[in-house]
Length: 507
Image 1: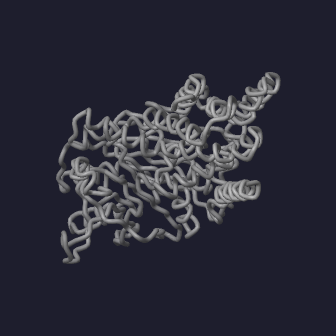
Image 2: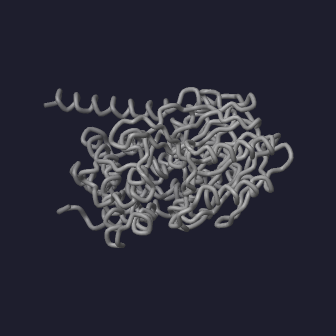
Image 3: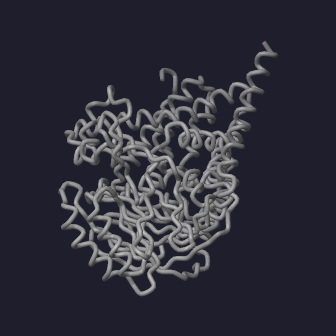
């Protein structure tokens, strides 16, 4: 850090704060904050490329500082989750948050380091031109390597109908690319003191931002689903029998005539597919309402093998409208420190959180549920942040997507709103309705353009009937996945190899 001008650190700090403001803090993001995504990275780019040449390690350190700040601010909800439900003290909860930020901030460090390497054989201008490709490559690495693509830059523009038109083609990565490209143009104008160009770029961004506020024509609905929001406390223990006595009548009351399906969320309820009373109660509900049912529950399989003698999955139990039990979907992508403890010997101090929710086994099949000739692709909670995984349900025949979740762990922090926006992006990428059923909000129906069309109020026990529709068309993104992001990554690798070879020839 010695020899790095104070101006650089001031710009890094400004960029980190701006990146925090792009995403929900404790509610929906106002338009003015979402609009900051057009400028949030420009200070970081100017810090890295707008002054005297920095060493590669200084590029990395500047990026790292920005990333740490971003994760501390955007994902602050990690701390209350840990001390409220993980049996930790507040200082220990902050320690987990800090470790979390130090770990994931390494991706911003990677972004900075790659720009630093490129700068060794490219001009500042050409390094800037490479920046959108590098950013997308790093976002892809975040999704593929550490499996935490939370709040990718493009998610900040989920309400922009102009930009989200790119998602069915290149996924959220295409939106991130455009945003970084505009930041690059502003950074270049800033560095060259081309203020008229800067004003022009901002003008174009403003036009796209305003035009994006005019949403697409509402998508017609042809079917009805019943979404049950039980609003159960995370800290209270419930009996399965008593809950069934409350939630079954609630489901019947909330169900409208012709409802195709009833959804219950992932929740603290002690429902298990090994419980015959549970299976009978839901079978009777489905039969009485002539509705299929997808019910958040624990999937249990007795296998007699150590260490427990059984396997326990975070599951969705599946019932047809005639009351027949059709099996279950077992969650594949589990939450670290929530559903399993990674590197248990190292992180024993975080075991309290796992003790609260139980250690789950990992599912293996992306089951598409077909109770009535239409395919329902079900993903549970955290799985909604993985675009490439959700698209596989649609590619496998899902005509509508179902997301059951329990965001009660996060209280009234930013996490439920951030989580909702990522589910909305999955709807846009695949052009599918998403029926989102949660324990305490946000429960509702998301149309194929990402609009939350109907929803239940948060923190109340209720059942609502929502409209939705089916589709069997496949978007380019659904068919081919992250080809755009991989293309950006291959380009970055190619330029790096070319530069290394060029330097070796020169020496």
